[in-house]
Each structure stands twice: as structure tokens, then as C-alpha cells.
Length: 118
Image (tube, rainbow, N blue to C red):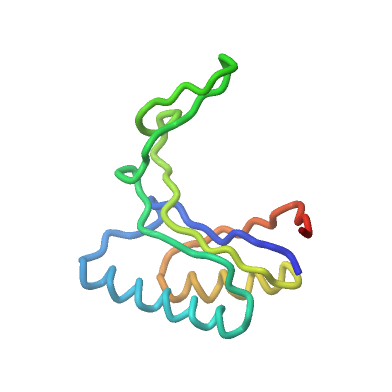
């Protein structure tokens, strides 16, 4: 099994009414329930945007320097994520496709390069 990150940028979410957003969230939660039933669900969360950034940390001086907001000016912000534990890329693609269709916006899939067994 391998861990995969399925994520989207907040900017990929179309302008939706509050009701439409609630409907999409409910569809997304239904897919998370399917992932749980399939035994591949690890973690998910969403609703992230520029307003949820707490701080950035710059270690270049040898000590952490904390500043408010994002480190660099950017219009892209992580909007949400899910971590799944599946056998291969095909499994990650399957669940990413299910999420994308459920919520109606693109998703990215990343394989974590190393998994250390504890």
C-alpha cells in the first residue's frame, strides 16, 4: 500500500452559492464515507483559503521567523485534501476521479515518495 495526497487549490472552485457549496460538500463527504468503507481513507479536510492562513515560517537565519499570511505572494491556496492508502496509482486515480466528480472541480494526485513502517 502507498499513501497518496488528493488535493485542490481554492482557486479551482467555481463561484457557488452557499446552498450549492453545501450540496457539493455533502457529495464529497459521501465519497469519504465510501473510502472509509473500502478501507483506504486516512484523512481529509477542506474549506481552506487565504483567510485560513495562520503564518509562514522562514528558517533562513537559523532560527524560525514567523510572519502573518503566506510566505510569498500567490493567488493559489490549498483548498482541501484527502489522504488515501491504496495499492497503486490506479487506486489513487480512481478515488481522485470520484472526488472530482462529486465536488465538480479538478483534483491533483501526489504519491508520497517514502513510507516508513513503524
